[in-house]
Length: 415
Image (tube, rainbow, N blue to C red; front, side, top):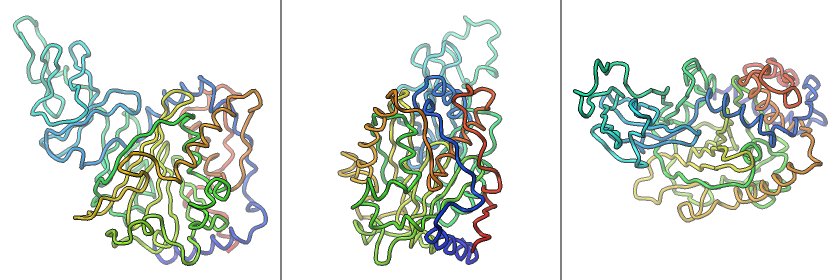
């Protein structure tokens, strides 16, 4: 961030601390329909549209370091193989042989000169081209050129590898929009993969994610973990195109980040600016990424559905090279044995929330101005799905207008 952006952000923090009501021009948010968390129809729409049309983080280059390295990725409900090709590009394919639909890879990861289907031996290169078939004399006029593996869009942001199942989707950089420029200071092209773990949760994936997209709950659920290091009354929420959002909340005087407390000698990303060094600077990348970014670590949390009332939490930690020091891991204890306390506080309560939203008494969700990022996510989800595809009783009205979306921000008029 440049000096002007920092000055405006600091001013907005003081505006938020002093206000006694939402900003005068901010719209009243209608209730979110409760069925968005429990209705199988909306769950199916998420599968058909949100997970199919969004850019999804799938891997880090450290997991595919050399040509021939591959990993299986099935988190979005589709069988995908990612492979590092001889050209240096990371390719993504459906893990589906063009002969009889068998998988071309069955190991979770490894290194192969070729991708060969175990069923009948059809063989492909790392670009997905069919190279040879067993008993070719038994096929008449088999056109190899139209029997390649089916590719999936795959693009990188620095060392991070994303996939998108929609051929008509915008590029990854266009999807990230202005956030891509904001992220330059964090050097994603230099970060290493320090930790990656998965945990099963007993709640709808949005319930788990939304606990990480507002600070309204901090003093209640996190009185000893987050509350002492985050000034929630000075939190500034910002909305970005394509459903993305950001929060920035200063740390109280004398407070340090969690990693600074735990590991004061960790190497830092030198280019990280003042705001990330003195505040919690956290981004929500539509649909399922939430991450604070700091000089010590870039640790995304990813939330995935595993049924309508279950989900999977993936915890990642990217960091500058740590040399001989113990690798950093912001989110787990004992290398993935369990979640750290702050995430246990959220996820354990999420299971209680799930029971409540399944009750006859749950009708909808009235959101406050502090929770505007949640409403904006749902509004953006309906934009992607298409409101004409959503039952009327499950729709969210397009309430937050573009005047509240970056680069616009009416609050600046009150500074």
